[in-house]
Length: 278
Image (cartoon, rainbow, N blue to C red; front, side):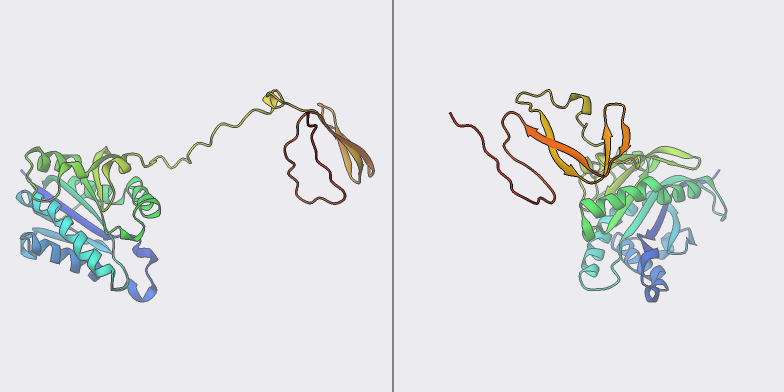
């Protein structure tokens, strides 16, 4: 029977937007701070049972007892990246996924590491990260962590972590190919309540309802308006929208009632505004 293993996947946020001269550095930009953070929580490279290169990051499997350390490691990573980004370019921000599942020792396409990649690459997760950077954290964001439901329930069911707590995470439904379940997200500098209120369906925020045209002109203090003058152009008349070519159309303007202001684009000629005083 395959043993349950703690799975870690890391890649660089917006690595594709790196300058050409930095692209070759991306794997090292990811590995170096993560390795330093792992060492800080007692994990070295020999602790991993498997490692796979993913282009701009890596996927790694550990014995399940290291699951709490993998999650606490993110707090150390936040500090390392914040210090680095203040003085060194390019700035590094990392997307991290943690999962727990039965994984054979031999390499291959197994369900747990497939699910781990689904978590890391989920479009809704990326959308939440973009929203946080644009509207909440700006460039202060250092890590975005997503934890599978199985890993979350295991590690926080007994409060096994030393640093990160369950209250720092918000639930996020993940639907990515055949993967469909709730995961848990923590983003540096973002309160869980803020995460829960981020629109995740990709739809724009509904606009405030507009007053129907049929309802205009019935408010208290309504006034009648007509125009008078000679205007070059065409004439549209009537509720039936009849259109009549007419190069010289006479238009009259009368405002009945109290008129407190006039708004116009370009105004030429004499203008007089007044009101009766009793």
